[in-house]
Image (cartoon, rainbow, N blue to C red; front, top):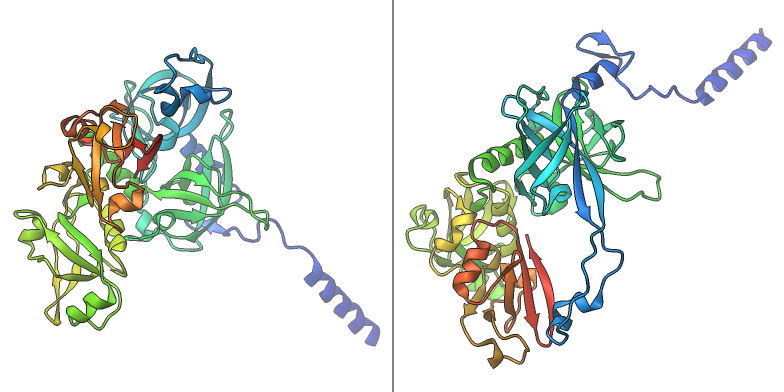
Length: 449
C-alpha cells in the first residue's frame, strides 16, 4: 500500500513539473465552437490586406557641402545621388466600394503615388489622399473598386487581456502573424503620446491588429526594440481613431484637429494665491480671442482650468495635449476655477487648420511666438531674407518646440519664406510644420508636431 501511495505521489509531482502545452494560453472556443486553428480567421483578413510599394531615394553618405550653412559660402553643389530603394508596407482596405486603403503615415511621407499589390496578385496605382502624423495614419485611393473591405470592431470595447492577432508584411514578401494579448489600452485625452495607442505583445510593426473574430481593432504602426526579457511591444492606432482620421482626410485632405482659441500659462504658487486657489496645478487663461467658441462658451481671462475631459490639468502643456487629441466640432468639458468657486464649461472646439485666422495667432504650433517683418541682416546672421522671431514666451507651444527669439525662418514645409505672407501660405492647412531656421551663424530644421 505504501508503495502504491509513493508511486502516485511521484507521478503527481512529475505531472506538475511537465511543461504546459504551447496552446495553454489560447481560448478553447470562439462563438461556441472549438478553436483548432486560426486559419479561417486569417484567411478572411488576408483578403483585405494589400502590399504597398514606395520608391525612396538613398543617399550613401551625407555630403557636408549640401548643408544650408555651407551653401551660403560655397557656390557649388554636388551631383544628386539618383539611387533609389523600394520599401514595402502593409495596407488594409477599409472601404472597398470607394477603393480606400489605410496604411502608416511614416511609410508614405513625402510620397504622392505608390504601387499597390492586391491580395489576388494584381498590381495597381495608388494615390496618397492625405495623412496624419499624430496618429500615423495615411489614406490611399485606388481606381479599382469593389475590393474586399475588412470587418471593423469597436476598439473602445477592447479590454486588457483580450486575445489579438497582428498580421503584417515586415519583409515585403509575405504576411506573417503573431498572436498575443492586449497589455494596455489607448487612453482618451492622454497627455502622453505613447498612451494614445493600443499596446500588445503581438508586435509586427505594420499591418493590422484583429480580434479572434477577424475584426480589425487597430492599425499597427511600430514595435519597440527587443528588451532584456526577449520581448517586444507592438503599438497600434485604435481603429475608431483611424476611421475618424480617414473621414477627415476624405473631406478635407488633413485632419481638422481641435483648437481652443485661448492662450494659457502654468499656474504658479504666486498666481494660485492671487486667484485664491488651494489646489496645486492648473492652466491659467491669459487671453481669449473675441468671438471664438471659447469666448461664446463663457471662458474668461483669469480662469484656471483644473480639469479637461477626464484628465486633471497640472500645467498648461497638459491642456494643449488634450485639446490636440480632439477633433473640430468636439465638445470638451472643462472644470475651471473663478473667483473662489468652480464651474463646468463645454466649449466646442474649432479647427486647428483655421487657427491662423483667429486674431494675431499665425498657427497653433507656433503659439507664443511673435513674428516681425524685418531685414534679417539687422540680426547677426548671414541670411538676407526670412521672417524674424522677435519674441517667444517661455513655456509656450513654440518654446517647447525649440523656437527662440532672433531665429529667422527661411523656409517652411520646403517652401521659401521671405515675409509673413509667404510664411502663412507655406503653413496654411498644415498640421505638422517643418521649419528651416537660421540661428546665429548656423542653421537647423525644426519639426513641429
